[in-house]
Length: 272
Image 1: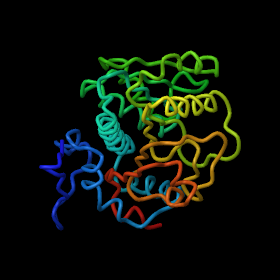
Image 2: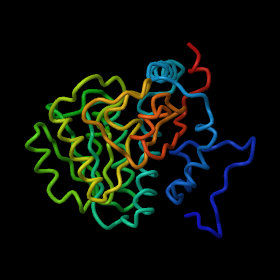
Image 3: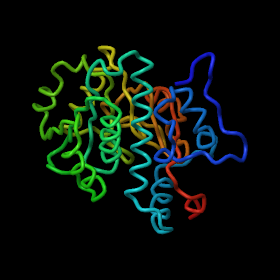
Image 4: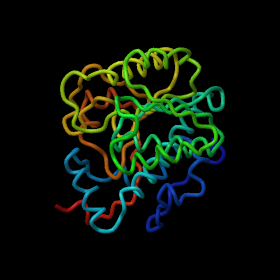
């Protein structure tokens, strides 16, 4: 891990920055080191939620499988979660709680859970919603993989009452990862996601650091407008390019420190 005597070094101009899955030192970096490693991605032009969706779809048309993009994103999330826990002096002091929605945002959290467990963390993964498995094929595949992963407990949380039970002792968590909802949230949140957001914010109020995946639930990635309730994160990790909504006053207030991780979307996928 970088120290004052050995700071993180940003790759020299022209050096290729490895993608998260291919980065052998990723889990040795602190938050500043991750920011330096991914500085080129952070310096890219911001994009809206619709532009990110389009880039993702075009990347897959160009031959980058969605499951590979999810693996890159989840690996980056895990590295950021570990760095956040270490910074807060909470690494290995308690389990990491990952709250996952049924879509691909939740899928990123499922991948992160696997990598965190592989690096020695105890992880509790809660699938929040009526579905017993994630809706998307890539997320469902990663949910199934966790059944064989030592150090991970999978929990289905279909109703608000179960969220309340999940929250008992949440102050002992090392980090809470918000992988509930991605883009496109409008209006009041419905249960059990609403109670899950309240749980995230209660945990933060008790001193547990919060990491949001792509955006805090429920910040609009295009406008920065907030739904009710909304997660307030300490760190948000988003992907490929900065998101316009996280640069607004309201969005930035909810996002905390923002990291932008490259996940292998080719530059030509940004072109409509």
